[in-house]
Image (tube, rainbow, N blue to C red):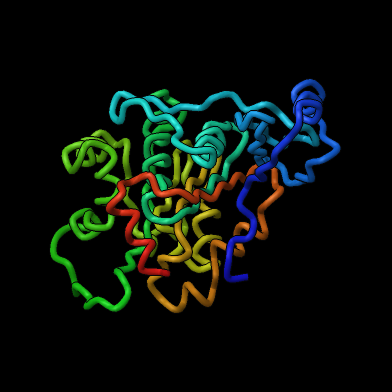
Length: 278
């Protein structure tokens, strides 16, 4: 189980009759989706995409999703997988939301923009940012960092700052009590209510660490996670395969939503990194 074979969606080319059955009855004689919250990226005979989601034994039409906030502006999906991911994030019936994908696919941008929009809309009191303080593999350790707890963890929160107005925007959220930064090591024993618990780069978590984070979700809170299993930085995470086990165990649960992004949307230059794997 070293690959995430389940992607959270099925792609299908449908004729007019099959598409009409989906639209009118919410059923299909062709599609085989059986997992709750699984998406269908359907293409009609002209190549136009129509989106559905499997809910309570039926296929529901998915309307065009977008995210909009004062801090981050408006975000629209750039590809079919982002379309599904954004709808999944906006689904208030899903409490554990996971997006995976390679670098540049937009997983972190989408997650942070959604979290900030939900915060601005008053759906949650704060964002609780949790990240394992893992450095890049095969680099020298920085040693004991000076300063306060926040100053020590700030370097690990900078990917969040990239999407919320830089360091100034990040520090304003913290100052206003809208963003709480908790090192993974200090999470045990916490019970977090009315918050978005956000775990970035979750490929660097063991199964036990994921269970620890999940166990902090109390009344009114949700868990938001992103990751890329190809960017793991330690053998312990390769061995544990935390994300794979999470998806395998939770797929089909009504409280769990998952989408794997496949296309890099960062830049043509960033996409060149893929050529090194060939």
